[in-house]
Image 1 (tube, rainbow, N blue to C red):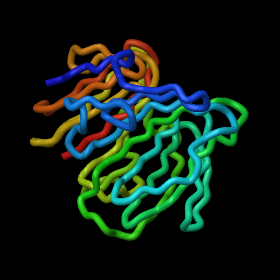
Image 2 (tube, rainbow, N blue to C red; image 1 turned 180 degrees about the vertical axis):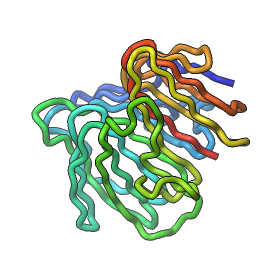
Image 3 (spheres, rainbow, N blue to C red; image 1 turned 30 degrees about the vertical axis):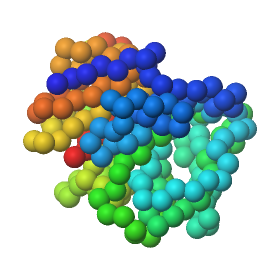
Image 4 (cartoon, rainbow, N blue to C red; image 1 turned 135 degrees about the vertical axis):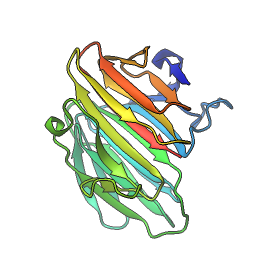
Length: 233
């Protein structure tokens, strides 16, 4: 089953400094049919104005992945971590027993991010944070793993404490890439840019695509496209 969730139909809010769309119930947006997708709990599409951002706030027992689409985001937390993650790169925060952090756009242009929350396999572990650059050339024409908690995945990927993985691909118009899905698992993917065909379903930039009971996805780019995909139990 492949269900298209158009960008225009997503929940969301405008806060002046933040323009956000919610693929799942979050904050003031509640949809009982979109509480989660397997272990995937949150997928927010955020545009953060220049020189603004999320002030310090706490989290616990959640794997929080930030995929930067445009600009950069600067992270700072109460563990003493500070780092800047630029477009195309990824940061991971395992909230564990508790962490307080800020995420600020210190740039002179707006920043666009996907904020992805995945429920952990185990609660009560020490909090951690990490970031890593992933040159887009490495994912040209095929999916590469950026973050994972699955055995046998690339050691180059950031580690998360969940039976899940985050992959991404950049395809030029006319290119295709395949993604194999293990039995019993679900996939949620969003084109960060462009327009794609997934097994006959067309999705534009920002649309969500919820996949279950499929074993093989063939993703074909109708325009130059950047695709982000989460595979969960």
